[in-house]
Image (cartoon, rainbow, N blue to C red; front, side):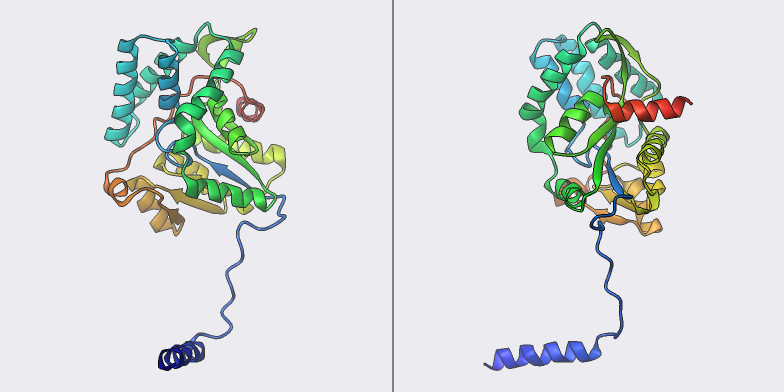
Length: 288
């Protein structure tokens, strides 16, 4: 009884000393706001690691390329993770490798395989915390897109599996449903992501100041800066510093051991597969 009395006294005391007329924070996302949407980076934001790397593992298992190519692919991924920056020469080499692997294959074949690879390697690597954030936007009646430099077909598979609206991703050229080994436009990376989001927002008649964006990488600062509600998710050191200086919200779903490491950047800029209506809209707007 004495304990209960102390607790009640403490509660009343805190009420007496609490500041008065302090407005409650507005709920976010806002229920029923059809002018708002959410844009999520994929690698290390929604999924642990790089989607293209997991996709490559699945293609290797299906004998799309040789062991020496896998070793090269793995080295490129390791370099992206350890260097903390994305060197243009390494990015170009990685893109060329990926494009050479899919050249001559049918788009429908890669889409079907992508479904299998999602179950094999990707599903268990989705961050539950980030997925909950995306679901909150969906529950509020808002559209949610993945925006990634990864192949747009991989992104489309992941978006569909997570129940999201769609995906923007890097687009590769195909003729009569067969990959040519060339990109359409540029990889959806860095400033290009911001351009694609701006174009999609215009097409959907969204108010970007009411929208949210989520990413782990400082390369996505242009996209994050577009919206009124930017979030740094599992941020690399540069993004963490920028987010704190800009008073952006941060969420870190990594273990303490992983979070203590130097930032692990995604293998951004190495997308190689085509498809996706939303991506086509964004690319079309960019070329105009």
